[in-house]
Image (cartoon, rainbow, N blue to C red; front, side):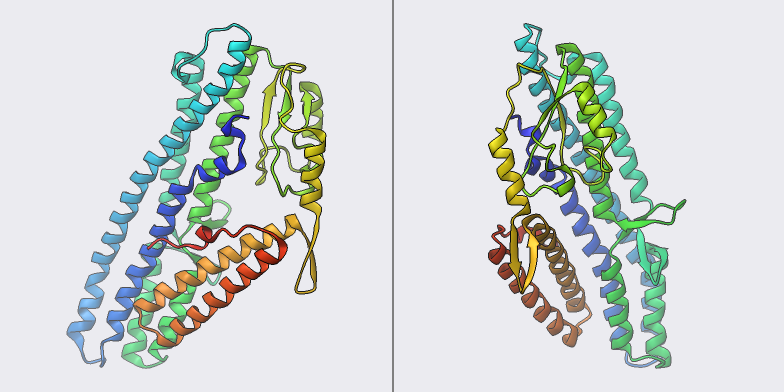
Length: 381
């Protein structure tokens, strides 16, 4: 089977983009934390010169953050182009298998076919434009209210200066609350019409993968008509969600597939579904997996495993594993931020929490028979 249909291959496609955005998230929070730390060194409300410097440096910090956003945006635009070029190439390699079978002229590139070229360029350009638009909505969600980066920065710095100059709140407490707010939110994107927000790395990753799925479907549509596909095979992967277990890996005629997909609450390729409907020629395309192999996948996904007296299916256990990875990453972000503001109490708490969560992650994974993915617990400094 072509690597285009390997779930790990697809999952890894936007990895560089995600890493760049995780770095940007840490960078923005740490710039604000560094300024908070400097304000905390002001010993007296009468030290007007230092307070004035702290306020004046706001424009410098915000300019630095803006420049870093532009730098990462440009970097990720290149990454998005690479992702779509790569996917288009693999699609052509797949189509050529059938072109060859039909004794048709094989394509060296999607640019050999004008219809394909127009379509690929349109989807690729749309994905890059969507990303640029998203990068203009970065901000934080605190106490249920969205603030853009400038508003968040000014709000937090004002809070720090107020704590120093008025003594209305212990400065360490004020900083601690501010840092926790930023980490819990993370840099987010917002849809101004709905007000819905999501962490920027999650939103961008979702958008890129939606673009990839659209590219796959539209390239399939064009090439499959040319080589005369009359059916589909649904890709299969281990630890599948229950609603798709009995259709993955199976072959269907076009009519059967359309009726099946229209009846699904979660159609193929939507709502975090990792399956792809591959065009095939019925009777010519051998199924990738035997019925026996597919039944084993179902059994493995539904196999009960026990941890701490709680019963999970192996699929449910994999979902808990993902949540633990997210918790470890967030606590590591906490640690880096509290190091900058020199909050020894929170540094110790974060280190202890990271150790506790990592031990739980390893113990849980080993107990239920899941491979460790410690790379998913990393943060990028």
